[in-house]
Length: 429
Image 1 (cartoon, rainbow, N blue to C red):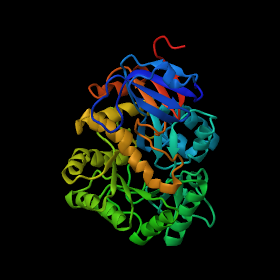
Image 2 (image 1 turned 90 degrees about the vertical axis):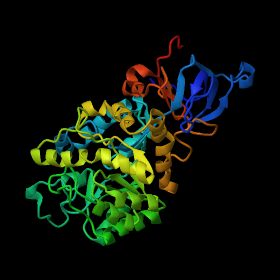
Image 3 (image 1 turned 45 degrees about the vertical axis):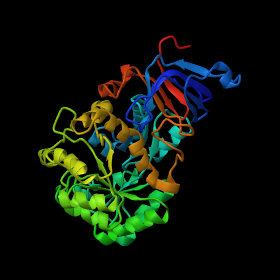
Image 4 (image 1 turned 30 degrees about the vertical axis):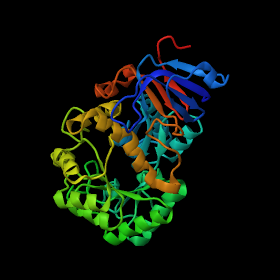
């Protein structure tokens, strides 16, 4: 269900504006087209100047900005790793389209896609072909040979001249060695419409060849990626866990570190001093953890999850700019628990701090893409002139953030870009 944007009035709501750690008193929020027109005391009917408006009775419920996931994989979240590596691209995209609508209905109105063939899905969503969140696409992972984005089978090595692996053909990864190849790979993603670039700078869990401790790419290669992105007015984010991989990336000019669960005090201090973002995920060895298919990957996973608590302590200690993302991969059941991954952040933060991080905080990170921002405008806040991505919550998420772990029941209205995608308010038309 999708209702075209026009004029919508959320009447009698308490507003969490994405920044202020308290709710407003009873207010009316007027949405005109794709943007918020006004926020304030009740709007009398004459105040709408005779314009035809859809009125949603908030009944004292909470209206908040749409949630933002800063590390999402729109094409790979809800398929197994085997399907991701072998399936027909058409199947992957159809599956991703279905999951995109589910993502939106969970309340995530924007995602930063941290690697994968998401350009077609982004276009389909933007043109209204399918429903889904705003996607800030990175395009293919840029990876060195034997890096975190190298999923070739052993019989595909050595690479024959001009031969691409399946992952490269479908746009999942781009294997590039040396400055010249890195420059080409980055520029190709920018050509396709990347809003930022994703580079693999260290070992990973799901990848078959690289232990967690390895550092990937030389500083010159990383700097080449950064300069190519900066020439287009945007930035590079890197996958990295260890102090060596993180510090090398920062020296090369990278603006955002993904993961980093094995960081130490000097690394966190460097992140803070340089103003580099730390996009950290609540990886724990619990029921919501990805289940690796082999013992070697499981051992790597345990290395990472053991460092999660310490990483959040370092963020607090050094005042690092931190973003929240779920990084759910290869499991439709885990994808459905996206909201639970957000709620889990109360292990380290207050509920309102979590909500600010997943709204206005993550919106600040998205804005780093500058002129490559596919959705210019203010996200993550409820204020006049901001983009109308809104959630009407049946309850108060500041006092009970667990509501967001059950979006089917707690989210009565989901609006993106002024268009209503869900409305289950009592007595609706």
